[in-house]
Amino acid sequence: MEFLPVVASVPPEIWLKIFAFVLWDDSIFDPDPVSSSPQPHLALRSWYDTERMLEVEKQRTILRRVSGTWKDIAGTLSPYHFQSTETTDTTIDDFSLQRAHRLQLGSPGDRFNREDGCCCRGYSYWNLSDPQEHRASSLLADHMSSIGTLRAEILIIPGSEWDALLTKPLEDVRRLLSKVRALLIEYSGLIPVIIPTLCPSITFLAIHATTDDSGYSILAPLALPSLSTLQLLIGSDECLEWVGKWDIPSLRYLELATISEKLGLSLSNFLRNVGQELVSLQLSDAFNPIAFFGDIWLTLPRVRYFGSTMIDSIPPQPPPNHPLQVFSNREHGSYSSWRDDLKEIVNEWTKIQCVSDTHVWDRVAKEFRYIQENYVTPLSSHHCEGRQICEQCVHSLYFTCEKRGVRYEDEYGRTWAEYKSGLHGIDD
Image 1 (cartoon, rainbow, N blue to C red):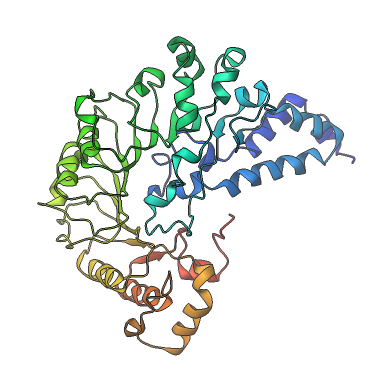
Image 2: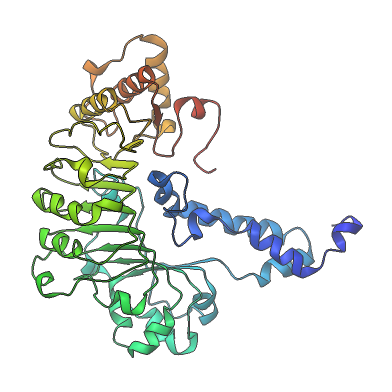
């Protein structure tokens, strides 16, 4: 392939910078993905999207095919993302582990898996298969002496791999993880108290805590001064009480999900401890409606983005000077009563400017378009309990939002009008 003279004269080091820019995607490689996003309630949707990572490597392949020179330049750029689904794979080389910006060990599961019986967004961040099914693994531990320090700022690691690391000298592990700023640990037991020692500068922590009540009462609270985003899946009130004692002055974005206990008084106490500076709060309970005690808006005076699964009793609307703008539905079950409650929220909470729902326009478009074209008023009385997403209820909530001038988004942040006009496609 022949290039114009001006193109052919560009030095390889300039092309290297251009290629690095082209192959970079902030939405998946930013170690602080929520705070840097203009739509915090949608940021983790992109951050966990493996399709975006595949697109980056597809783009690299395209660049390599242009010419021999471009092939060489693209080849010198180490992959930004490395994933191993088998952490005992002995064919993995040190270079792949050491140079990746985002290092993902083991299989994190489908971020939006609908086959695990999950009914809420926060719960489905995790692959909830039995931790005992995972083989003991030590990929990083085995390569640690030859790696030295990881380049990775993002580390996604199963509990077995994490436990294997902790069998190594502490200073070696600290050096290995010294650049990590986003840490996701899956299938761990008690939340490791050593996290601040090994990763003192983390800005994003996602962790699946134990379902065992015992043990947290004797642990010292963690101090994570740089932590701005916490994504926590818990199974006990005692764990929640302990996390509420952490020293996390920079926390602004919190996603909290529970899989076995009802969030009640312990949630209110927890929010009183951490809620004053929060900008975004997303709550998910897989089994029970969430109950709030007291005036939640006094507890959350700065929250602009609020999301929840079903609420036991809808709190009063925020005061006039409250900054709340977006409400996110985190319930994936098809419950007519909850979307009726959402319509009540839209009508009564005058601060709301946007409702983010759990449907995807691509999957409900045919039925939704038929309802919209043939019925002037919504069909709330025709709710279909058997479907995961009831198109009639989606239309009814859409109708309420339209009437109030509230933006109504699907799970990808698209309005119906944007979807119809072809904007903001799923793979954009």
